[in-house]
Structures are given as C-alpha cells and as structure tokens.
Image (cartoon, rainbow, N blue to C red):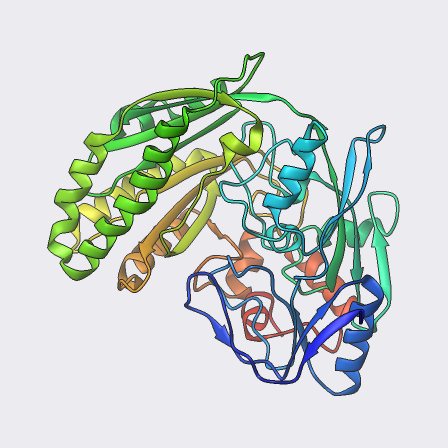
Length: 440
C-alpha cells in the first residue's frame, strides 16, 4: 500500500455547515509523517500552497486552498500511552471520539473537553476548541508535545523542553506555522462526573453567575432568546457510583428532543420566522431537571445533528454578564428571530499566545443560527457588543475581525506573527483567511 493516496481531480471539499467549499488542485491523504513531509516538498516544488483540513467543524475558511489539500483520513490512531508520564501520543487526524473511546478502554481520560467530539485532534487544537472549566482549560492547554512538518518539508518536534518557543505558539497555530502530524496530551486516570442540569430564570443566572462559576468545576448555561428562561449545567467530580442516564431518557432528551424535534422546530422557524418566539417560549418551559453520573466524555459531549452556523466571542469574565444583558436587550429591540439558544461557558487564563483565554479569565458567548437562515444582521449585532468589551473571536467560528483589531486584543500577537515569519516566510501555509486575521 502506498504511503499516501493522491487525487489530481479537483474534488470539492465542504465543511460540516456547508457554508465553505473548495476545489483544490490536489487532494492528498498521507498515512505517515514522512509521506506528509514529501507532500509538502512536492507542493513547494510545484509552486502550490498547502492546507490541512480535518472534519470541517470550523465555520471559517481556515482550511481553504486552491493548491494541495491534506486530508487526515489515514493519519490516525493512538501511537503510545505512557502511564508513568501520564501522556498519550496520537496521530493528528484521529477524531476526538476515537481518542476518547481508546482512553476509556485504558481507564484514562482527558481532563476537560468541548461539547462535541467529531473533530480531529489537530483541528480541535489548531482552532482553540474548548469546553467550560473553573480550573481546567482548553484542549490545546492539555498538550505536552507535538510534531509538525514545516514549510521546507522538515519535521520539527517540540515540547516545553524542546523548541519551547515554537511549542508555546503552535498549540493553537491556525495551520499557519506548519502541518501537525502528532500530538501528545496529558491524561489522568478516568474519573466520574455528576451532571446536574436544571432550568433557571435569566435574572437569577446572571446575578449568581460568579458564585455558580466559583462553586462548580464546570459550569455553563444556555439562554433561550425571546424568553427569560435558561438551562444550567453543573459538572463536578464524583466518587460514584456511576448512574448514567437511562437509555430511553437519554434517547428522548439527546436524540428526539435535542436533535429530532429541534430539527423540525428550526425548519418551521426558517419557513415561518414569526413562529420562532412562541416556539422558544414553549421550548424553554419544556425543560426539566436531570442528574446523572458517568465517565467524562459521556458527560461533557453531546450529539449535534442539527446543522447551523456559529459565532463565539471570548470576553473578560468580569464583562460576561453585562455583555449578555446587552445581547438580550438587542434581541428584544430587534426583528431578529433566533431559534438557537445562546451558550455561555468559562475558562481560566492560559499561556498560549493565540488562545482566546490567553492571559485572562474568560467567558465565552456563543450564538448560532439554523443553516440556511439569514444570520448576518444578528451576528453583526452580537459582534458589535462583544468587540466593545474587548472580545476575541473563536478562530474557527464566523467573525469579521482583522489583524489590526486582533493585535489590539492579543498582547502576544506579535510574538506569533514573528514566529510565522521565521517558519513560513513564503506563506506555503497561507490563505485568504490567514491573511485577514494575521496580516501579510
């Protein structure tokens, strides 16, 4: 079997939401670091740019190229578990759901994770995927080492001890520094989480927000636009025993209601926008409390089958409540018909230059619209509010910010761009999106 599969036919690649499509000159699926390095060398020799795409769960054009598109399908699998060091090394194209299942089989787990696990590990870290946590940070913050192919086709390994300056920045690299081939994550013995989900009025959640964050290891909530209703979720470590959701209750809540019925509701709202506020009020009142205890990935993550587009901003945590109240007021004064809840999460400060939580305690406000529904006016209104609070957009979600703005909200922005100039001076890994957010 060849070390890579290559197609010269201009096949069209689309992202999950369907709002980004690209027809590259070549699509290549390397199965080893050496094959990927050779792919980069050949592309450079042919004057083509290179981008790697994961499973397409970004809403931006971060992976777009008219040159060589690297697909991760064959660069997968767990390469090693070091129990003494508390690490797992995994190929870059491995989906998070595969990693989570493999770790669970070994009695291990990541400390924290986002709420979906369809992404590849490299795609998730490269765009700054995060969950919610008082003390534990993003997926990228759990990396202890990585390997990547640089623009000259060489292979660079880095960690806090080896090429530490590259490691510091490359954990969230936007695909601008090289193509990641392997990642080493810190892991810990598998633990149990008890999830407590319950409805709560908007005014109570916002007035008690700081207390709810302080008292829980992982706190998040969803506000339903056009209503005063929220749904809260508190995840905390538990001594057990495990008490998973009963299979039928889990299916009703997570498949029938959160995906099946919600799909129908969104379709109705798209066809008849006037129905959205009334349906939102019914939906927010239909929520019921539930408590369950399970292994981490079964608590942190949920299936997401209703397709949407999304914008998410990271604001200083102390600005979160004010920004959310402004957003609620903006929706109430407008003609926006918003069928998706607004999601609010938190993260501690970290030390990654382009992390949305770099150097500051952070709250995330995420807004969504059903795919195919006009979203621009709503997202523009949200963006005006969030940028007024020094917000940083999620790198993989829709936003209109450019390098000039981003340099003002990321104190270490120049550190990253200087490293990019050193590692990829000819912009082998460049594209229009990176030109906008990082500059020329």
